[in-house]
View 1: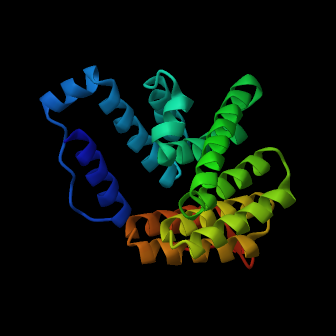
View 2: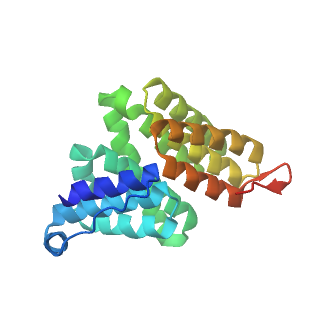
Length: 230
């Protein structure tokens, strides 16, 4: 029930409904406190939603708590949790770029392990995992300041997600490519990616995410010398 409620909360926020998700009961809170597997799933969903809505500190916090729940993190992820490895990797590279010294290197290493896990999955199922691996390659290259390589892999991730019908991951790859180009002042190219991301998130039905994306780029992107208006 707890995992189902987490999924419900995620869906409601993504689609932007006014419906309020159910709170956890006292019994469910007790289960969270003593069941490591349930706590792991809970923390992953919190990390995932924080990442999708660009909440950096919360993404970092819940990813750390998620990783703390796993005895042998990467062995478990390689065997059972490719989806979780994917988003853990994306969060890790994001946090690494905003961190310094040893903390940043630790997050970079986590991202690398995620990327290698997804590469192995892609070797066994190109259709399902290729685009995810490409996007992690792009984010790693961004971290390593290999900017031309990053551009190439963002495009490969977008193309692969489109070819394999993962509209939500096509949207995500476009969004992250947009933030990449914002960083270097190429607002025209960034807006191309952001508009495509918005279109694909809308196609996916994530209207709440569409609103969040618009609000975010309104604060960070200038078009023709003026900020995008809300």
